[in-house]
Image (cartoon, rainbow, N blue to C red; front, top):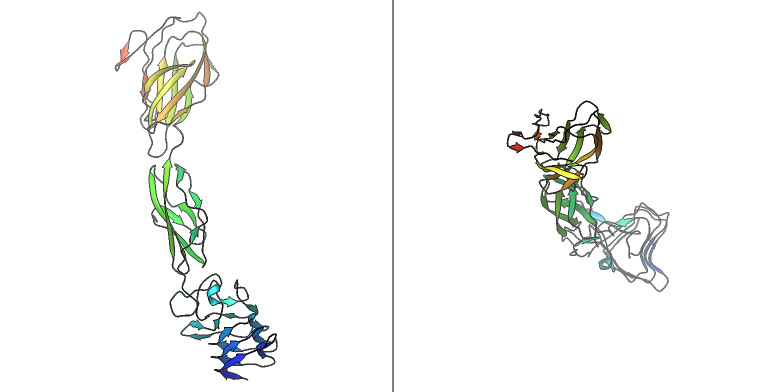
Length: 361
């Protein structure tokens, strides 16, 4: 048992200033140590050494400890209080509360893993004296960018930052619509995002309380036009008994979007450009069609002006003796997606303000 309090110890070139061998429960405190090789060397057969409130200068290695049961700071009210190392301002250890004892940073505690530190072996100092405060803010690894998100899709966006201290946490200001993983910086939506632009702020804090923020937008949009399903006539169907064709399709949108206008295209020619598809199922009736093959499809736009065109479907009219080349057309909409029967009409008839038309071929 050795108790050394106060004093000055120095060594010659190539010598250890303090060398503890085969001694347990040694206490060394308030000593200024100036050496050229090792300030304090503790052998493997020495343990329970207490080493604190000392000042270490000009040593190639400040501490060399070959036993894990040695201690390099005392504790006062739960605060580690250790030793002063000449290079303390050159390592990433900082004093976050202004008490002159290091308590944070990627180099904390001062030990063999501290980059730039001069420590070999076991043990650590959890309260190195003289650590400075950290005033450097984190930096983005890549500056956060504005996001465009397809309506109904899940948001998954990650930001990264680095710091001379340690990153403590990431956060987002709009917690009603978004969540952010505090550790990884992963941003996700917590609700179904509406079709609008969200203005949000992403922040990162280091362990010294320095903050960095970036403002970005999340633009939720629809990149596609309405969904279109052709219902009737069925593809590759042949009508042997009637010269009438009832074109039925379903057009709908997602979320707050609405179908604005749809067009019927038959054999490459567009008809009925005023079809209102806002309520779902729609139908157009043509009468007295000549025998032949008919290719048809539907094009619809939504309220954002985005267009979508269905795939083409084909049907045939094949009635013995043929039919007169007279056409009539009528459009109507079902309510809430339920089809409502449409009244057919023939040449010269007007129904609900919609005029029939005909042509000779």
